[in-house]
Image (cartoon, rainbow, N blue to C red; front, top):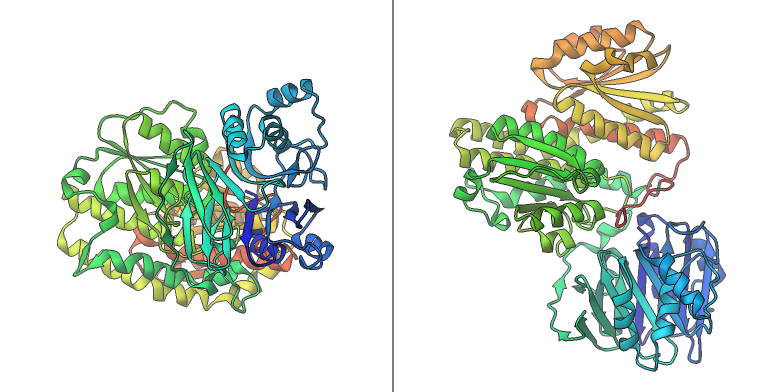
Length: 608
């Protein structure tokens, strides 16, 4: 959550910081601010609301001169959204400035300690504690003050720090919240995520846990928590810079939906060679895969829904039992991990706090962890024993679409590779499945081209109060994601239910005119799902069905049918989710919602 951007160099800092913050708006925020060294003092500018308010306040940064500064977009955790709670925060003299992502868990104790030492607080935030604690320890040496502060602080943090007495340097500090630094010929940068600085440099360094970076205009130094200078290797970011722009689409979400054929292709192609699956970065031998006796998939949100779908595919193909856990539950339920178990964590950003904590819990217990992530160099990518990358490129919209599709494909590949190792799939079946995978990008493109049909249907339900999604097996997994897409961007109450559970309470919610979206892509479950559709229709529901082209029987029970192209039932999620993504999108657009930045949500959830 939140966003940090910092710059020190030969250019004016404020316009660069504002531009960088605009690339991080997808992370979610309610206020924004900057601290710029103007040649004599640190000039603070803060504003509640959208970044545009801060841009107008500073005339696009032109009225806040200076070549070094730090900026921040805040998503409230401690204290309501307000100018005084907005970052940056500072000491009483305004000579030390701090921006912070994360949560300081012992801030109340530190606040009490500092008040007893005579410090006064203006805000309700945990971050202001850091500024005063730095002031308490500062005796002329910024690094010394930072190290002493870090030894007192508990929690998660990504920090940008400035000292007025040292205008030629800014500091970046990280523990459990994502942070990168970069460099070009004009200066050095800090940021929460690559899109913020992609316009300026492709040479970045991923800051590891409990590392401090000292940035000057033309160089930077890295230190560990023991105050030892360390060497870091840069990473070249080869993203297409246009991938972080809308490229003529009305919203990032729509653009990213249309990028799904390419995303699927890019995730598949490097792994399919000569009719076989080769996942080089997986770094696991067939013998190691053969020894996997159980799999635990751990994730949050849409990644969790991909995991639910993956469970059905892995168990069907490889005959390996799979448990799927919400990361926020896994880390606290004292899970039983038996010998031969492998933990798979899924995260688009690779920085999801609960998922990262689950990874560390599994590794602490001595179990192998596979990360399925989209961001090279992210925390999960670095800390997992093995990695399977989803080559989706930057995803800006808060509601994931293309990253979810890439996660599904990655799980298909993993399931097939595991099945090969276990000897549960023969050459003919492998050939058939590979053919289905290779057809997916074109089939997704076909479905995207039906957007006008979906939009016309969506417009009928702009005033809906409740929408339900039902399905069985993989169709239940599809329903979970379809429901989430709708509710998170349109603010319509929506729930997904296993269709067989309708009579165990849920059906009492159905009334005249209620929309029920029934997903029926699994041939062996068609008749069961059709029976459930008849049940809800008899109670007044309007039934939307998403099914396969050969299932014409469903027309007798549905009021409106969307057909998906023929594929193997195990891969049906990749196709059935497309019309449901479009449906949620057009409902949200029709209701005038901020599709790319839904209220109260953030792209990268880096705190509990």
